[in-house]
Picture 1 (cartoon, rainbow, N blue to C red):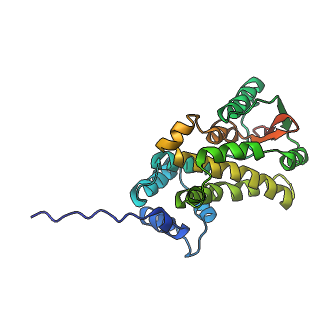
Picture 2 (tube, rainbow, N blue to C red; picture 1 turned 30 degrees about the vertical axis):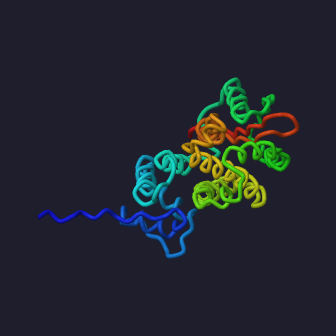
Picture 3 (cartoon, rainbow, N blue to C red; picture 1 turned 135 degrees about the vertical axis):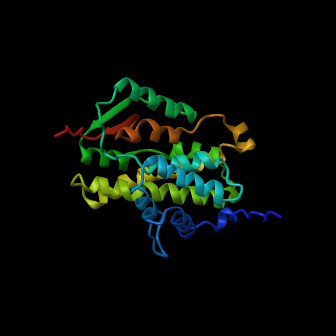
Length: 258
């Protein structure tokens, strides 16, 4: 009689922690070494030693094979791999201004907000820091929360907490370090990193509710925050957002090949 093959156990989302993710990854890749108190940021940093395709395989595998009834697991894992591999501050080419205006318009339209004229900041980190501090995201966050849910149960959802924590862990530290490398001060680096990590975190949350029937009926708009990482951040630029009636995008200096 053929022995029954036991499937590995699955965990409820509320049981997920950095230690569970690190345990799974070490089982897949013996070269990965984590301490018992490794953070999500440390885990994502270690993953960057692998190709983006392999990272995606590992992260999708964790969500699909380890978590029980996690919504939209493959897309969620792919998004984490994407944001973990962005080359921050390294635009490869001069952006097309018309395309950036269209992307900006699309972002606001997906949220049901009026579009704004585009202002591009080029290479001036002090100016972009001021823009970040003046950016007006309250209306944007109101629209995002309206989509993902504002009840107490939704706000305390383990799925939401996992999305927020992993999105933040994949982005904040690496953006912070990349800004410091430009010669910026630590406060500037922290403000810009937090601004970017918030967008990544809530883009991840949006993905986890995309398959909910109730929420899909409430809004059929595709994820506006995820779009920023597909079309702006991954090109080396930063979406600052609304500032004094303009939509601001920062384009760092394009480094010429030696």
